[in-house]
Length: 311
Picture 1 (tube, rainbow, N blue to C red):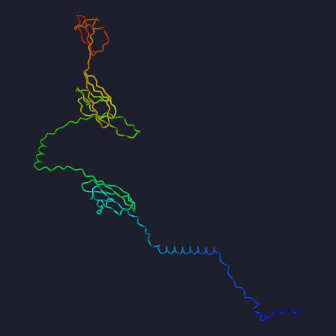
Picture 2 (picture 1 turned 90 degrees about the vertical axis):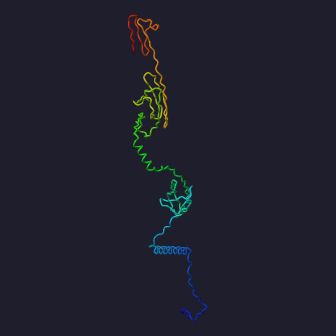
Picture 3 (picture 1 turned 60 degrees about the vertical axis):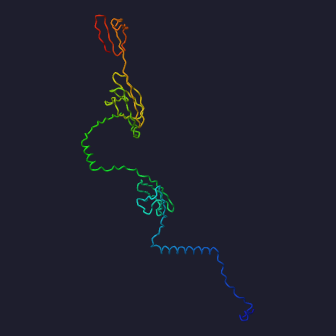
């Protein structure tokens, strides 16, 4: 069998061989573009931040100053001077406004000649207006004695030198012992009052709550200091009935006791031996009994001497 011979390229017509197909790149995914965009933004941010830090690393940090506060100062007496934290403000005469106060607490003083100073502590808030209203009160007038002339001074010294020195005795008032203070409780000053005692007789002895003093004898014109409350007061003298009463003392006040002492009245009981003997006064003696009088006498039949008997 004879071999098949392929035709020569030149013998094949051009229409029979088609052109080679061109290479086409597959389209990129949208996720790739998104990732690339984000990566670019991050890289640009890092580069920008690093550059800003490098350019400003030697410069001091600037801290913004706090906002100042305003203070309006008024007073009931216009024309007063103002001081803040001990520093006078010559430009501020009431009514006035101070505009450069830092936030925080400040002490404001308002003063004027002839008036008492006014002081107040105020808290200033930044960016806000604050107000102080000062109430100035007038100073109390002082009486200054007029100077004496040389002649008047000489007369005054001469009169003082010739005047005898008078010594006035000072009468001390004995104090009544106050109730004991419980040590477990806090110490509180006791409340006290005074008691003034008078009597219609002199030489009467004063006793308070069974306590007395040698100086407590009427007439006694010095008030006695007592603890507030009820006290038992007794005024007594031989030959007179005791005057006893309860007195309530009020704190910070003076109470008065006017004692009226009356003379004691006794009786004489006459007893005779034997009973029934008639006394010189014409009265018959009773049967012997228990003596209840301050004094008694006894009598005997005629020819016997009688003698008084004290009980």
